[in-house]
Length: 243
Image 1 (cartoon, helix red, strand yellow):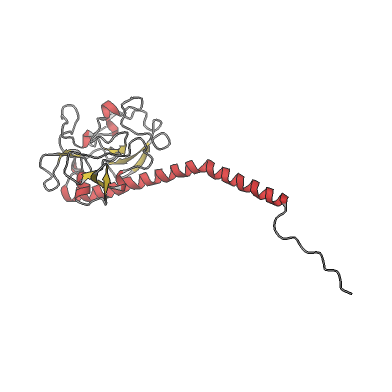
Image 2: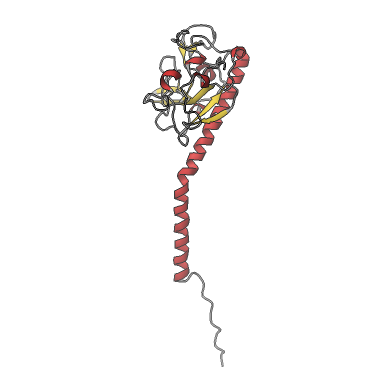
């Protein structure tokens, strides 16, 4: 006589186990979606900080070779003392201090350097600087100020404007050289447009209510209304400022 077979163990999930698994997966997905914006924000902040360090290194090499900081000024790529208005980063691109890609933008070949674009800045993704020959520089959304040189500046209005800053004249090593900006302007006027409450402020509050800034000493810091309530003050911008 054949012996009855032993009871077989069921394989797979029971309905209750399946429902529990679905519930756990849903909870994990909800947690992921809730934290994803924060993860993206942190990644953008880290990329921005890395950008500014890259620019700092490129600028340091430029200073070592030319003796002054890159600025929006009367500058020619082959003769830095010649006339011709260019953005502060133009020579960093054309002389390959910063790597770039030649990309078609709106039908024009443009030099696009990833280090010049902050991924958190959605309102100012950059634009073509058209007052040069092709390939055109794609404008950065990091802005310098007229304290570091400005083609149209007036020394009696902006101390130091109209000429370039050499390391030997810097007395304020914590002066802001570059900062996240709402525009692709060549150089800002801090006393006129750096105030947090000004509708024309050129500072982009794209990182947790503040902006990342590159200082003259090479440090990258976070600038916020809390840390710098008087941001329009000369002491934060002028590399020649003395207490």
